[in-house]
Amino acid sequence: MTRGHFIALALLAACALLLPLATDDSYILSLMIFSGINAIVAIGLCILMGSAGQVSLGQAGFYGIGAYASAILSQLFGLPVVAAICGAAVLSAAAAVILAVPSLRLKGHYLAVATLGFGEIVYIFLNEFGPGGPSGFGDIPPFSAFGVVITESRHFAWLVWSVLILLIIFSLNMLNARPGRALRALHGSETASSAVGLDVVALKIKVFVLSAIYASIAGSLYAHYVSFISPSSFALFYSVLLLMMVVLGGITTVWGGVVGAVLITLLPEPLKAFEELDVLVYGMILTLSLLFLRRGIVPMITERFSSYRENRSA
Amino acid sequence: MLEVRDVTKTFGGLRALDNVSFDVPHHSITALIGPNGAGKTTMMNIISGIFPPDSGSVSFHGVTISGTSPSKIAKQGLSRTFQHLELFSDMTVLENVMVGRYIKGSSGFVASGLHLPSVRREERENRRIAIALLEDIGLAGKQGELAKNLPLGEQRILEIGRALATEPVVLLLDEPAAGLNIRETRNLGNMIIGLNSERGITILLVEHDMDLVMRISTEIHVLNFGQKIAAGKPEEIQRNRDVITAYLGEEDS
Image (cartoon, each protein chain N blue to C red):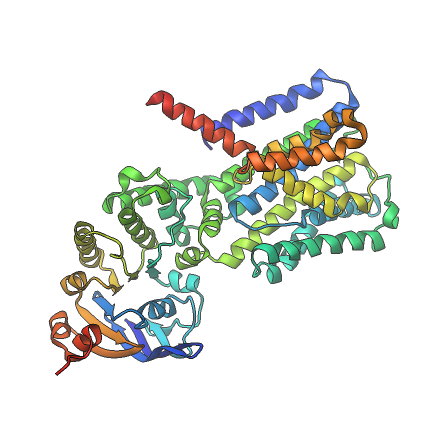
């Protein structure tokens, strides 16, 4: 890990630690929790899109599987929450393999459409067969581990951001080592990748599974936080929102996912001043940022910074 | 050691390769030459597994490799470069070579994410080998640069470096001198001779630059319109009437 990553992690950890101490406002804490949950899904999508060059419009499906499976396993089957989250992750991983094997032979738009179809299937499935159907179900047990039950928002915020930070560290380590290089190579040239012995299909399946597990963990955390879930939270709109997060933040680095997730989660708040026009302004801001921040916020900032340092040293 | 037997490949109505056979002996520098459209790159793509032959076979150490995947062929010890460069252009020079080390490593997603000691050891070792390789091919000073920012000549050398990182038994070079100037081509020739004599790597070379081919090859096979028209030592090929006709056209007499 480079010094830049280390500083960013330290800053993130400090914010995550101090913000819940600075406020009692449960609304602010809930925004922080949702930012963290979205960021977990977004960094998975960043690895999938930015490093491996695969597009997914179905992350909401894995997020939904994570939420429903964990909720059902813990509430109806009485499993410990941590075990339920792990079980949900295994289920999401299995779904990812089933989706990936046929569809990763597709490229670009076709793959995007296949994942979009997957997201829709999960959504319809939850509506038809999920407990409570379209109206969802509640009384999902709160998160607990080793006998400690987390009910307070402040503690849950720490939990979510700890998971996020650990996953960022995991991702950075992975991307800086053999598998990460292979993924970036795949993005650069599949022909050359296979010529040096990379198993292109196996690598794509693995990274797809990884991003599905991230989404699943986030979905599980969501379910145990809100304690009531319904299919509408896992519709196509959420997949599109995730895409917005990573594109806005920048897909080439996991930090782009974090920054994008926080911004998109918080953006509706100041827009409430516009009342009915908020959706319009929201759309305008997103369109403009895509026009002027084409490569995403984080890559643009880091490039500015490094060119500034080069100029100074020259 | 590498045996090509009766390979035929058609694209639509075009017969790109027609019953072509040849051997690449151990430790040789074998060249495949011929006018444009003779089927040389098609042959390279068949040997490296990008597509299978319609009929015929390619075997390596007596094992048939045609019809398997490029990555399996690479793992058996055949590595290649591309006529139209296929570098990982947004990765650094060092990273390009380290991707070439992939098949020699074993660290998976989980172990790497957890930064286990075994991963750290493997990374250190691979980095050391990759840097040593870059020193050998004269790119050590550029290891931090993005591959796409190198001049063409160095990009070609880097592709060879990446292929070498897989520790190949046979190196397939598809027009490595294309776009290089005279001095760069001479250095490339010396480098290929060095790889062959010092590292013991068998070379199969497709090349248009006749000075280079005649200088470094031990054996030459000539293709024309998908058919093999001649084979022999450089001096034999230079005197071969069929070859001269293929390259220069029929003499009016």
